[in-house]
Length: 409
Image (cartoon, rainbow, N blue to C red; front, side):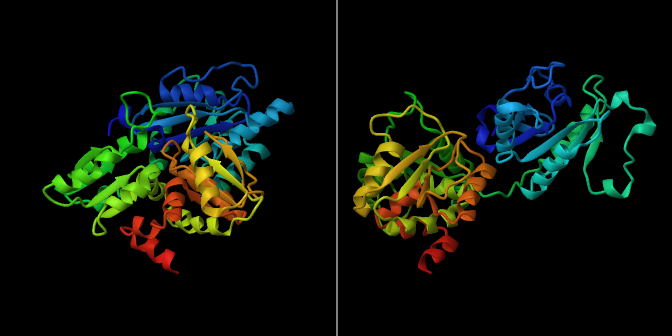
């Protein structure tokens, strides 16, 4: 998949952190070869995280994130620091930029501690090293430096910028064997039928991202993708020369599609496939059982990773609350979050129902899941919750034996 075709959620996210005036933005501009970030001698020039999807050799498609100074002051400064730390929930590689003339401070050490705690590969860049003599430079062979990846560089002179990019690339190596959406379930010449209702919220003439990515994955597996609307499934299954290996549907029409799909054909949804793709299918499947434990007055968080314009019958704010209330018969309260906003404290909720997360990368989805699990709050996702309430969840994960087994425990 080329640079322009790679969704931001599937790119390597590289975050640049550090104190004000350490030269983060200057280093970002040198590494990217673009004036991506505003540069100034005035402390605190970067006031919000700045993200840019781009091609960065030798890594390929990436998202570069420049963050505010981690030592910002005052009320607004505290908010900026918080925003900078939130970025850590979605970066795959962290670059800590330190002013070489001043060295690391407690603030820098705190960041390194967070990198290690969150298991984020990181690199320390000692910027402005052109201002140091060789005797002033930190001894790379000293005992306390052997375990810390670092490099001297200079945004002003371009010193070691190429080497810096190489080091970042070595930390950003991705696993080529990573699970695909559905391609690993298919053989060449298999058929996959995709049931795609025309979504009024999607831009006219375009499929939404999960549908696009699934089609691409089917084709890369050498299989055939047959894309139909929900009222065409029955006739399509009758006229095909052979049975499809799998039917993948939009969760909103699960009930109709389940009735029309023979039991010997795998059935699942885009949302369930994305839960596996983002690494949280087992937890999300287990979390759906909490729907049966809901009581009057319980609060439920509906969380989406995107910020699309909501339609009159929006699934997150209208359909799901209605379906959950009808299924449980309980008087429930619903709250909502969207985009990058996700509450750190979720203890007031009895359940979190998340979207498939196609706009979020795997690390951020795992962070949100961990927030819930650490606070002992069950978390599931749209498709899994709908399948559970329809009584078809076990069928919809039949192709994933490890998950199916968990549901039988």
